[in-house]
Image (cartoon, rainbow, N blue to C red; front, side, top):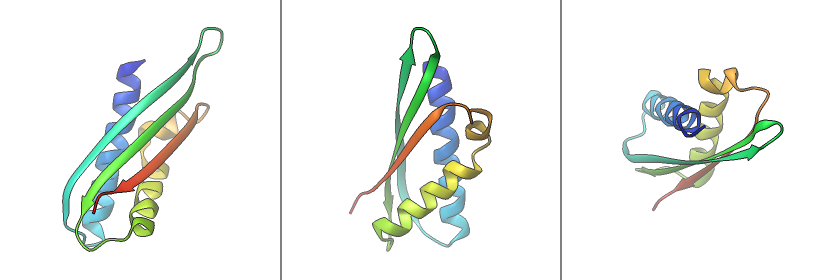
Length: 93
């Protein structure tokens, strides 16, 4: 369970880093954390990922949009389409 959450959060982080670079932003730091919700009957029922970023000259709204795009484009996320996922973006200033 922890490995699955780590794989997914890493994928979102790497995809966000790629998207930021592609858009010309200078990233100082990206960090992710994740929580898994487990039901003893249904198994994994949710994953909550938070991406913390330190990106020069970027608004919170733009950062949230990049992270949302990363979630959609992450191949691990596509494989987990039956699991409820929440992703938050927090830009450090």
